[in-house]
Image 1 (cartoon, helix red, strand yellow):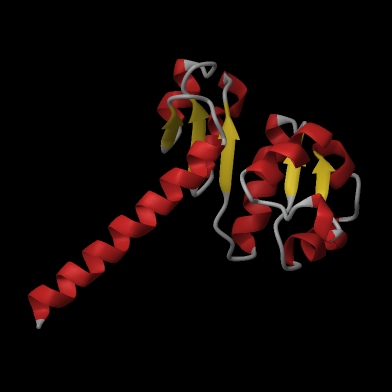
Image 2 (cartoon, rainbow, N blue to C red; image 1 turned 45 degrees about the horizontal axis):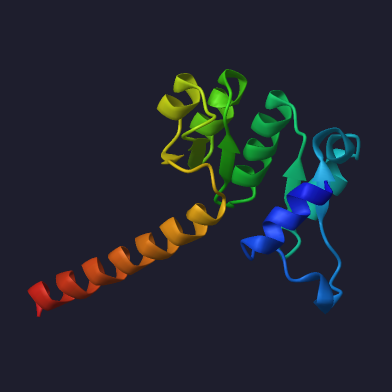
Length: 142
């Protein structure tokens, strides 16, 4: 869990430790041992959550729960067993170096360098492209 939290802080998914804010980070089995009502309540609460060491079936169940709450889910994976969850997620992200061909085929995005901070850069670039497209379409219409 500590490694997942450290990576999440490095790529600004979680706030720095110096702010002293509570962290919502769970191992898969720890989260799914809770009653379903509590799981949904945690997922619906504001802020980012980190899940680590989740079984493939847990990943799929988590994606379903998030999508039932109207959330957009992103899932990272590198193995054959991650492929169903990568396909089911709104955004499936596979590892390009350590990932299997099956996971790369199932994913929407493949990280060429296996670096999680690349996800942040890709999202920023995608938002810029989207904004440029909106501006161009408005220009064409006016």
